Amino acid sequence: MELKKNPKADVGKNSSLYFVIGLAAVLGLVYGAMEWKKYDKSNEYDISMNIEDQLDEEVPMTEQIKTPPPPPPPAAPEIIEVVEDEEEVEETVIESTETSQEEEVMEVEEVEVEEIDEDISVPFAVIEDVPVFPGCEGASNKKQCFQDMMQKHIRKNFRYPEIAQEMGVQGRVNVIFVIQKDGSIGNIRMRGPDKNLEKEALRIINKLPKMTPGKQRGRAVKVPFSIPITFKLQ
Image 1: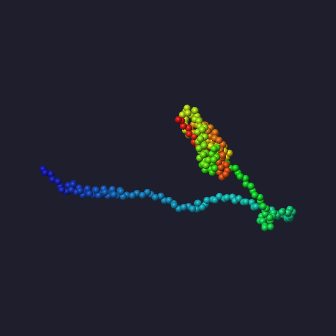
Image 2: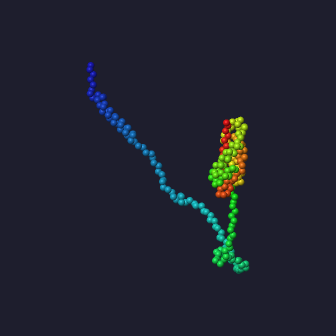
Image 3: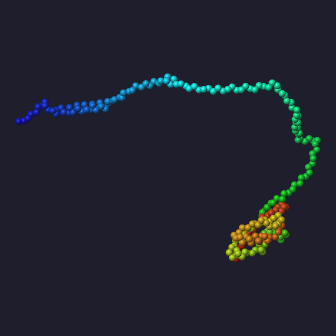
């Protein structure tokens, strides 16, 4: 027996239409839920300022300090005594210092100026009149003669210290001395490699004879002189 369906009883006939209607309904509900707005209840506040309460504040009263009035001035004396100056004051008279033609001018005697003996020191190289070594009085070149006589004096009195020879000490001793204004030798200073050599150089210089002092502008002056003494082992 063949079964036959009634076309009016077909359930899936309008299924697509129902689907579209349901989808539109769901979209409408979702849209409405998203657009729904809820407002809180507003409280009513009184925003008016009550100024009268602030003006009603009580201001404290300050006590005023009263200063006493100044004392009255002292009363003037009834009788004023006048005191007379009994002492006389002498006036100071300033006399003029200007001289007149009638006054005589006193002559002043010549004033003697004492020469001060200055302690001048002039180097040997620039002095006008060099010190004269004994034996150079008649030399034409007294400066060269002085130096030659100094070398001769050193060679004559030279003696090598034995202790320096044993130690093998040698070198040059620089000696500086001053020919005083009276021609004597003083202020001897030396510097060398060994004390024994310096002592020998001092002995040689102390044997120098007294000289004629050097002169600058006709006056005797001190003249410093320096000379090296060489100690050399053979």
